[in-house]
Length: 98
Image (tube, rainbow, N blue to C red):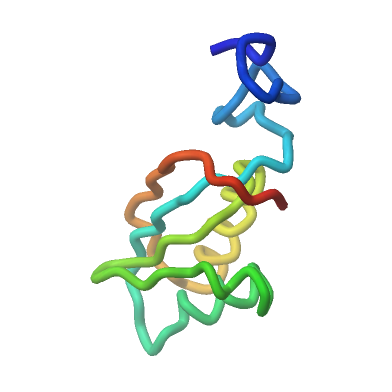
C-alpha cells in the first residue's frame, strides 16, 4: 500500500521496511540465549522503565514494541552483552509511537 492510499496517510512509502524512519511502532520477537536474565536486563535498559511495561517474556525470548530503526541498536546491545540472538521476527504495526 502506498502512503497516499492509507487512512490516515503515512509519512513514508517505506512502511515496515529498513527505510522506515517514522515513529511508527511494531511488535518484534527477539529469540535469545538467556543466562541469568542478561538479555532481559539489556532489553529493559534499552527500552527504559516506561516502555519495558510492554515487554512480554516468551519461552525462548522476548516480545517488545519498537520503531524499526531501533532494532539494529538493540541487537548490537544484546550481542555486545554476549547474548546470542537467534532470530528477530517483525510482527504487525501497533498504535504506539516512539
